[in-house]
Length: 346
Ligand code: HEM
Image (cartoon, rainbow, N blue to C red; front, side, top):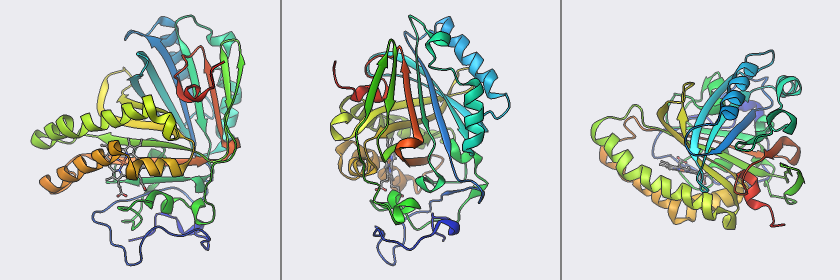
């Protein structure tokens, strides 16, 4: 076993470890390992939004252009795509771009990122949103049930040995290097500035982002039926709760998405992704809210009955950003899009 916190980031703790002494986790789990020189992770969520399930030409053109831009100098080292229908009934196409170097991203963005520029993408029938997190590496943690990587961790150089910091509430915090000395308390509030159809949201200190993924491509027969028939509906209910009622418990906005390939075909992969007021509120939801407890419980039964996760691959990446490590812009989007959900009524 080795700690989820890489050696180079180990500090003398001033914040308590949640893990009990002599803790032995019930099953194996791992964290992604990155090269020592990596000091920032960049995750850019770029979305288009429209009514109905057929994308208007302006949305298709924008995504095609974006793909071309990603191939230019300093473009992302990895990207993936996903689709979902939001609580307001709009279809959203997400392109998520990843870099492991802030300067490279900034150079690329300066030359190429006009996603929410009204003079480029003003459209009556399509909304454009951009949510970018650029956490320093000590503000990023991952957990994987197996060796296949997803999200930013596709850019990792491999995986850790089994980690002890999992299988108990509070373990995500124990995996964060920064949380050794920082309680990651939220501070300040979101500020919204509207200019025509564009809303720019200024973040506050220590907002939290999670991408929590499921991959059932390798499940077969009864386990697959059980995942799709028993676990997934419970997951969908939890995701709906966060999207529609999450604001009351600190979740600014949640998306439950299906991963798609470059031709838009749905893969047997999904993830829930949400921005939170704080890590503490995400922790509280996961350990105490009936929706996550039920998700957790149905998964426990599945593992018990089939003697393991049998092809079902789960992972998550969690980030807590400083106020200057995130950027949020919404052009022509409806009121329940991302952080706009938290915008006070005019
Ligand atoms: C932790 C199950 C989806 C948020 C966990 C753990 C399990 C679990 C077993 C404990 C992992 C460990 O420490 O070893 C599941 C299953 C899911 C699912 C089966 C879907 C099929 C989600 C989603 C979110 C989420 C979509 C958020 C949007 C969390 C968080 C933790 C956690 C934040 C860490 C809690 C802590 O460290 O205190 N989940 N989960 N989960 N889950 Fe989920």
